[in-house]
Amino acid sequence: MRKTLKIVCIIISTLIVLLCSTTNILTSSTGGVSLTLFESFYVYLVLIAISLYLIFKGKKANIFLIISLLTYLYTYYLANQMINVLTDIKITFEPTYYIYLSSAILIIISLFLNEPKPQNNNLLENNLNLDKNDFIFTNFVMGIKELPFNTVILLINDTLKNSINLNYSLDNVNKKTIELSKNTIKNITYTKKVKLTNVSKTTEDHQTKSMLLSVAMFGGHPIMQMLGAQEFNSLFDAVSNNYDKVKCDNYYEIMLETTLNNEDIKLVFNTDTNPEIFINKIINSLKK
Image 1 (tube, rainbow, N blue to C red):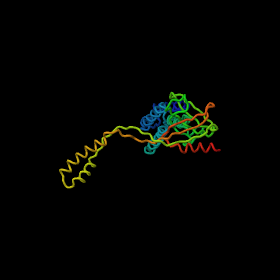
Image 2 (cartoon, rainbow, N blue to C red):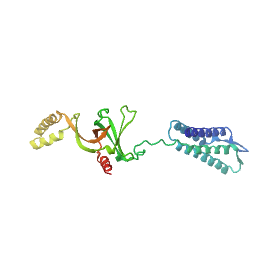
Image 3 (cartoon, rainbow, N blue to C red):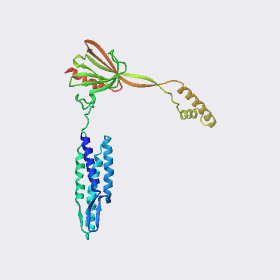
């Protein structure tokens, strides 16, 4: 609604300016001066066109509207300069001049007709009143038959409901939540583990190593140094590039013992984020 009113105000203002440009805004005994003779008029039209385009695209346009208001001031300045310079000619402001200036009021009104900010669904600012240590992203490992392995689970320490919530989606559309009352939580711990993964081999440059070893072995014999360096380089390549390299990454396994549907279960999650603060907050709340 506000967007529509904003557009209406801008369009009406533009129509008024265009109508005023069809007649003289200043007159004298020697002739009249039209709004089209002022470069500010054309700057105004360009700025308004940009503003309308941005508004239709759902983007902010107030900065261009504010600049368009400055064109009125520039026109006012040029008109008064003309009167001050041409002192021997009587120049009269026509009613269209004041109508033109009054159209700026609609632009000013449009500046305040902005769409309300959408409700922030960020977890840090929703009704749960969470801080960054009240939630952690994990991957499900085991504990609930209905949940596939490796499902992304957002664990939330809901301090208002005094529960631990498992937020997840199986189709990337519909969010589901499992609420575990803290009264049912028997234990929650985490363990730091190491994950080994194979990575693609990359050829290493061993020329410096070969050269240093060759110099050390063959001293002041340049030819032997050169031949030795070549052999050593081949040796280093064979040793370092004929095996699969393994990358070691740390991850954390979270274990949550609770009761769900009158059944004692152990939930296991994996996460790359250190859960120490998250879990400590939960443990401290369980003690209360």
